[in-house]
Image (cartoon, rainbow, N blue to C red):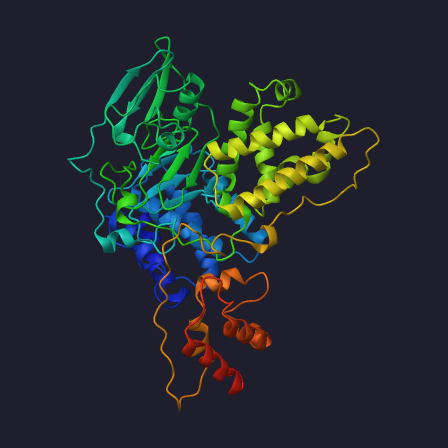
Length: 555
């Protein structure tokens, strides 16, 4: 099968598959750019879904040949995604991915940058979102680079319609590594590839000084803190040297993280356009970087954003997901435990991945994916970890205290609602661990990993902060005296989002059914001026609510 024949079959399938020409932008366009010979006359019969599966296998077989053009690779990525969407169930999906992976088995994992187009990702085994949750990966993928795709992180061809250019800005910060010798460590910094994620300036501002020159004050912090900051830099801009010898890059599994409102963060040495020199780097996802393909921090300035968090986030989501929790546990076990007289002996023989294990437990407990259960054995394994250790209250109290400090240093949220829930679990969980570790303890077996929630349903945004600027309510249009009062048109707009959040522990103020059920009690509170909590309603709003009740509480 030639690329021209593949293109001809794609045109037929595009006509027969579904309304709207689903292959036009993502398959036919890039294939057309790659084909330089006449298309043959082809005829095909059979169900479109079956023909799609045959087409994607043939495209993948062509893609693995040496010298495959970017247009073919981009089209293959779109076909693989579409064919997997047509899978009947999870077993069929796994079978299709396995079949395509087998065709691509001899290709190395890599990322190639298509000219003025997407990132062509080959055989990447791990792609996660900013929370650390897995994103379905396919053997061949095309990731959006222009920032406009409606199917992020996958490319949908929007770069062509937008006239996206992958050119670097001539006025960008120079790609140059500077050295800053200090008393204990030399800091290496390349401002040209910095993604301005703020990991260094937020956590070690005495060394990495935002808005000051020179940016780096290499003797402004302890050596271990500087090394930790350099290793945490997601762009690869920071490095360090000790005694004149540049430290090697960390060894990590190949992975791609789709960061929140920001770049793709690559780790594990995935080659970029054949360059194997970088263990980690950040690739632009907003389309506006001055140093494409690398991120230059422009996403902050252009307002690039992903869909917002749900109205009722879990503790896992609010904390920042697995990356944030892992950051915290690594700070705890790498920094605080070794220097503590009580805890250092207790954890002296912990496994090298102990911080990751604790982070996975907290992730699952706080409402995230079942990472600890799937990777480490769940509740029964955790019980076994503590059995017979005779933990003391002194150990427990120190553990809880230092975990709070690690949470501060890791940048976990500091709002009262989150910290109440976080501290509550740390206290509860650590006391359970002490109890289960005592001689003769018989904890119930085969229980699920506990799920922790907001304390008394107090979520972020459910109260008015004393530091918040006065909230301005959108104008409410009152009905005319002879106009029927409706819940959707007149009553619901009276309740602000803040009012709704503050009452979610009891009922939903934006729900007709809930407000109907509690209408009399709500009216009583409104007339007393006790609702909402930050000030009484105007008299005309209270009377409108009473009128709605009198008219039979219509929807």
